[in-house]
Image (cartoon, rainbow, N blue to C red; front, side, top):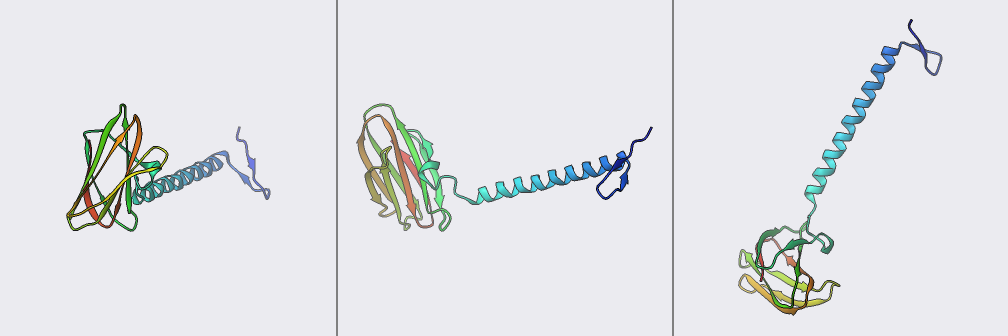
Length: 151
């Protein structure tokens, strides 16, 4: 026994036809959702993943990290390090090319500026005696590759 469905306007539609329309609509919505997901991912790739203090990448004492700045989208990079005991924390940056001007800043957990240096002949260093806690480093400047080390 075949059942007919009534659509608005009084049109009768067979169940198989109605099901086919629903499936096409769901597939279409899935395609739109997929396109939106890919577009969102592509836009996120264009943004700087470590361009704010809230997006700071964690480094460990004794480690070095290489990165680059590419203004105008990527004008600054942020990092943080967790210190478990009172130490003298030294952070250095080496710019490539050596003619690039980079600014290195060390901040406490609350954003208080502890030390600042600007590259001269391609390198800069800041040192500070610190207590246990979290400390942030910001590298900013023009177009350059750099290596940041924490010891």
